[in-house]
Amino acid sequence: MEIALLLSKEHSTLPRAEVDAVMDCEGVKYHLKMEQEGLLILDIPHKNPEDLERVIERLSYTHEVFQILLQVDENDLLTEAEKYPWDEIVSSSYAVRVKKMDKKSKLNTSKLEWDLGGIIKSRVSDQVRVNLENPSTFLRVVLKDGQAIAGNQIGKISKKHFFNLKPHKRPFFYPGSMSPKLARCMVNLTRIKKGQALLDPFCGTGGILIEAGMVGARVIGTDIDYKMVNGTKKNLEHCGISNYQVFQEDARKLELPHKVDAIVTDPPYGISASTRGEKSHDLYHQAMKSLQGLIKEDGLLCLATPHYLDLDEILAGTKFKIIEQHHIRMHKSLTRVISLLSLV
Ligand SMILES: C[S@@+](CC[C@H](N)C(=O)[O-])C[C@H]1O[C@@H](n2cnc3c(N)ncnc32)[C@H](O)[C@@H]1O
Image (cartoon, rainbow, N blue to C red; front, side, top):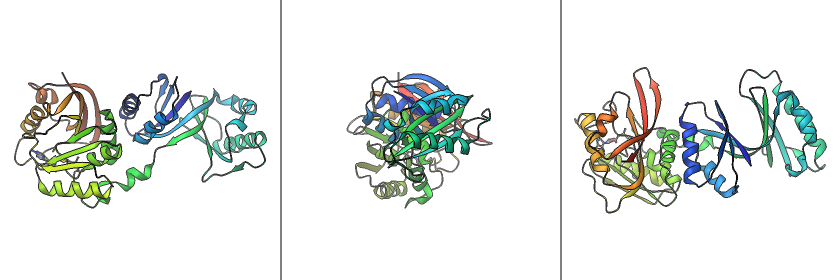
């Protein structure tokens, strides 16, 4: 089957990288059919609905996923829709929503929704109703580049989750906490699987651990500051995550009884988060030296750093190498660099 993913336009590379990573770790194989700004079309040869459901549940930088039913020139959409067996797709109720993804389309979206809705009505049983609030079948049409792509929505990423878990809405808050969306994406980039162990050695208020816990990882968090340790525990409990181990430790001296499957972390930038007087560069270098012994050989580490730190220099003399990087402009004087590292 072919699916379309409507990606967030918040960032140019992270949404696609996140899709790749989650598909990979959930074992869903695909061929890329089309990639345009905000839209990804994939062909999935062996469909297993549960695998795809798990993928959709994990994503943070994707808005919506639908199974493609028609992909035609936008001027032919209604003619093709007349021929489509809608009774095989639409069950008890339906809604049609059209979204223009660029300025090329001359079509009126409300009129198209009305016309398509009418065609579907004439092809399904009398019991089937239009339900704009909570339809059993949600038909999405996107207009992009003169094409109309119509499909049956199979997943929508809940904005509520990322909104309700914003750092200031948790019981313990401290400035410098990472947004839940980015934290989830970083967790996903490591391809961590349910039941595997993920470590954040600079856990702060626990934002990364919350997202890792929500995708089913066993989470281990440490921080040099006991206030953060207690705060992280509170926040994890608040989010219903009980499979955790959180304790006070300096990331440069950390030891664990077992190696972890992934590390995701956001060390202090030397601005708002405390570095305890240590220069960021030295702190990062020493921490990386200690972390290289704590991660399994095939494990991945996802790290957020400020642009002014030279990661190549930080990693020199460690066993880590950079395999992927994404730059997020925060404001005029700060760009965050998200790096995915593996052991050499
Ligand atoms: C940028 S904050 C982490 C924010 C976190 N991602 C969140 O969402 O809340 C960095 C954390 O590193 C901790 N820290 C500073 N030096 C440390 C060290 N040597 N070892 C462990 N933690 C340290 C600070 O106490 C702070 O909580």
